[in-house]
Length: 82
Image (tube, rainbow, N blue to C red; front, side, top):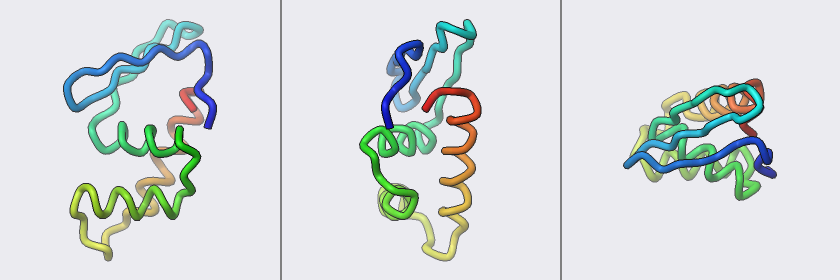
């Protein structure tokens, strides 16, 4: 994923602030959304991101991780952050 030029990143402890200069809007990503964003920027697939998130956050494999990852990615795209 190529980061749009109008997005500025700033670290806020475990969270990540994304400033959209075109829309003059600020978005704060919690630690999970931040990690999904970072992995997507590394061109990881949804399946790879799901596996990373499950391991890193020690989530139960039966959890709806894939659906949550997909929803997060879709929201990032809808807000033109990805």
